[in-house]
Image (cartoon, rainbow, N blue to C red; front, side, top):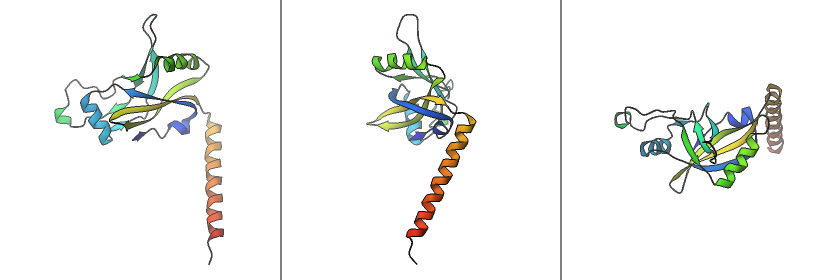
Length: 154
């Protein structure tokens, strides 16, 4: 399982979606081995004319499984299509058009021998929101430690 750790820190997650990734065989092997990074990647809707747009994962790095056996023209950060139902895509179109909402990948995992991606509709956090989250996390940690000390009997 590959996780985007910065996603929950930088964004407020409103809603999550799951979709399949369209990959090549050597990319699947690399992902199963854990040679993928979601840092700096994002999800976009690309449409052609009057058709329903397609969903793509942009800028996700998949390192080669075996560098010697990988094709020479292999692009590690190429755009990869995400497979979703039509209803989910049309729902995303309406929500992304709202002000300051974006689609970010949260994690990539294996489900019944298929590579799935979980991405979220999210709103960017401001710097003060991040500081508040850190402060809250530290307070919770201190409370938990104090409760453990009080429960410990000498």
